[in-house]
Length: 308
Image (tube, rainbow, N blue to C red):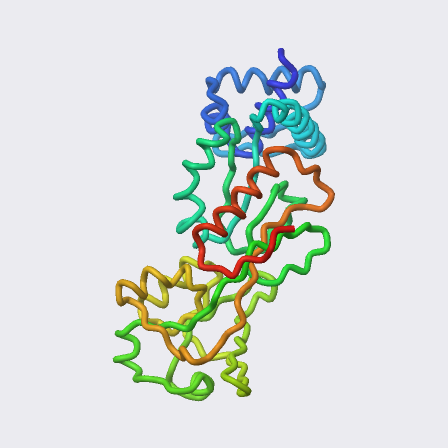
């Protein structure tokens, strides 16, 4: 038994929840993966997994072993990555999480370029707008909009996203035009509510026009916690949207969305690439962060801040 192959097989079974799925991702047969895990349990003289016909769960000993093995394998990958970096070939696995609209509109379409540059880097991508605990969930880095307050993270400011207010033509025909943002507070007009991951509730927006300033909460019949769902709700005419321009641009061009309150200014949304402060910045993470920053600077309508 190759001990490290067995460890990797065990970790992949835990992460996928299935011997079959683990075998597929490791390009092994299910029988081989099963034998490796069984040999590992025999060598350790403990049971690592509880198996049923439907799922695989860690035992108490398995939880402890999994936590240690993941760290060990990560250190091994870092060592190999550091050595391979001397020849300009970073390799290994990265776990990343980005907002779902960013993944759909920018990151995923651009990934062929990344993999052409770095064919030996494997990406495990999460596309979500939820709060991520990078340490507990073993995430290498995230892309997030809005202020970052977690002191355990190192955040690279990639730029500022312009924000606008939009509605569909159908919504405006149904509910009528609107002249001033304050009308959103006490009228029949509705917004689509977006529940921020940190606050867990729909937050107000601040606007200004010259010296005039207003803070608008708005009223909604639907709130969501995902960017793609938020845009879909607005396109369905369920309310006005407060959107980064990159999400609205194609729908403005097609006539699906109409800009509102164009003489008013909204503070742009800061965009960050963040990773744990206590994590070694290996070659694969470094090149990925640089590549994402380059992608944002080249393709997204942002006011780019000088790189740190």
